[in-house]
Image (cartoon, rainbow over all chains, first blue to last red; front, top):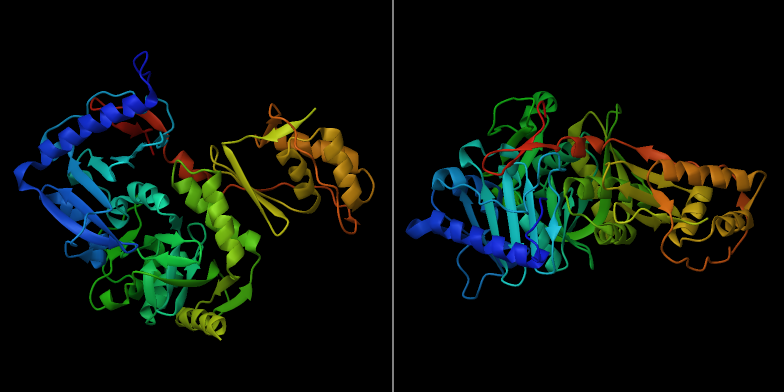
Amino acid sequence: MTEAAPGETPGAVMESMFARLETLSRAATGHARRERWYGIAGRPVRVVGAPGPLFDRLAPAVAHLETRPPPGEAELTVLVWDLASARQVLPASPLFPGPGAALGPVLTTDRFRFTMFQSTLSFYDRDRRLALYCVSDAGRFPVYESAGPLRFILRWWAGDHGLHLVHSAAVGTAAGGVLLTGPGGSGKSTSALACLADGLLYAGDDYVLVEPDPPYVHGLYASAKLDWEHRARVPHLLPDPVNQPSSEEKACAFLSDPLRGQLSDGFALRAVFLPNVTDQGATTVVPASRARALRALAPATLLQLPGSSADDLTALADLAAGLPCFELRLGRDLSTVAPAVRAVLAEAAA
Amino acid sequence: MRFEVCQPGVVHETIDGEVVAINLETGAYYSLRDSAAAIWAGVERAAPVDEVVAAVEAGFDGEGISAEARRFLGELEREGLIRPAERPAERLNASTGQSRQFVPPVLERYDDMEDLLLLDPVHDVDAQGWPQPAPGQ
């Protein structure tokens, strides 16, 4: 962050920049503005932008949450635009990271949250429940952003409602489900997709919103990702990736018909599962310590989301402490994953 | 001499007697159990080293506890998890329950998440103000 003008408080700098960017966004959207409404964690969220590639690329991952405009106000409005389409440039600002700075720090005041992460700018005004989401060029919008759009803004907004954005998959039934958590390569997505293929509900494979007390997971993104190499071994789990094989990005797909009915907007949480790829034939489940569950949950969540704090870790510790935790020893026969999950759910319900 | 946790860059929680600490600046995370967790409990309260050592000696049976505890504090400091304390000390709770057999403290370090942070250094800022990753990222 470069220096602010003498006498300017961080709050004043943020407020001034938010106003300038809001003006840019409204100019970019103009009279052709479109809006979509979503029910996120049961709350009305409105996304407003100009017709065009960015507006379209934000939509597939949250299409299952789209709703009709509700009679009341939005609890969050997000203005989205891309500078290239609008032929705009960012105004200079002391908020932007300078050369050599770590990318992605979150600048925070009581009222505002701001970050620039890779090709996106996210800015949230808590008082107005208004957010700005700007990208440099929608034509170069990465697939991983399409798979989990607006996640910084949704994290900040959800935090104001006592919800936590957690790096986990979640599968289950209407009566309850499990979080599947762990670092990349642990088998989280494979487990979730194997459960989806077996008929379980699916609330996400990467980021979900978690309500801690009582534990409840809200589905967020209808996307799924697998390493290309792994996908080649289990193509039936991710049949129609939207991107081409590359070393830069995982294979990504958006779940639609006939799986749409299995996309869940949420269920009560009954357990935390820690997938672990093994050489055994069938999948088995063994108890795991709550500390191990926290080691799986917390680093992946906190380190992938800049701006994390001790409070975020405490929330995850409370979650791990409040649920039974299990290691999910993934067998080579992936048809055995869902029955193992169902067995734990049945025991929890008994 | 007193130490404190390097907050806010280091966050930590204790669950079922195991400390899980995460260095948000490096991406490394850690597990501390048994005598290591007991030493951490003292650092968490910015207690004087002598009191930390005394607390560990009260909770564990064995030889060389003082030397091992001091060595471990040095390891935690070199790892960037703790630093000389500026905040006031809090009272250390007396050990309750039976003493356990002392095993030298171990810092279990996990670095499988460090790549997440290394992926995103800013190398430069383009003409429009957008941060650009370093070449080869």
